[in-house]
Length: 438
Image 1 (cartoon, helix red, strand yellow):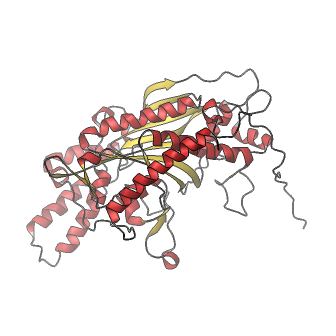
Image 2 (tube, one colour; image 1 turned 45 degrees about the horizontal axis):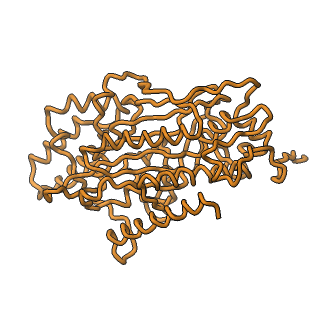
């Protein structure tokens, strides 16, 4: 057993103990179950104040253009004019809450004048210079027999993939590397479900309905009502804390998870072919719950972790502050990290982090008790530590060598059982296409 593995195991055991104590405190000896609030505490002082209508309307237009703040206020005024015993009260109240939930989060003031383009914060590292004809990820993988991304029509179709041999080992090495470092930085590891109730996903700000949704819904006739496949583990982590009241001394609560992520991607752009945009992939996620006065600092901390991780992999990347129209409904501010992919001659997003303030915590009723005993909503933040497919593209294209092999960054060597570069694999059968005879 290697020293690195022993250290990882010790850290994992410590994290598992903390996770058990957290579960025990939350659920006692009963089985854990989803506990989503039926009635959400809307911030009426903000949404239903006529003086804020113009400001909120401008925010909606700068975002995705979803939500009708004028209708929200009309419904609110109707509710105030009738008694709860009125035959129409329940229907109006239901529509009022429905419309309130469509309004996006506030936007950080620093973003309001960004326009359509992201703000470049910094570059990290330098673009690698090659003295040989460098190649793109699919060509490298085909030559070394590392992945299969085509001819999958009889299986799961396009936007799917197989990672073979050493590339599959590299995927697992990345997961272990990121987890070990997150646990060293006081994150607690939680294994999460990938099948979630629809209302948990929607409470986190994701649309699950209509033709443009990226969420896979399960057949309600076969699998029970309103179940979906998770697109990111932050949703399960947020749902795990639903109806929880944390003490201020427990914050910030730093969680991480490894999961498969399922997304109904539809892009047919040439630059997003192969494993760049796929229907399912492995991702290591960070999720932080904190007090409102510290969430801005926590977002900077998450970004710092991401920058350190990717710099240690000897990658060149740029850090971007994203404009309002690039924010999801739940995000108050979002940073993207785009790594240079030389074979594609482009920067590609490999990570992001967001401060969701109290958008998710209000919908899931996650609060904390202050020192004076009063309750307030926590702020939630999330960040991608490692989204495997795109990180593999950047690693393979950046570290390709003139002799056709792939250099393995020093930080990953101990997780790959050796320092050998990745070479052509001769012991894994190559795909041979056979045309059917008519």
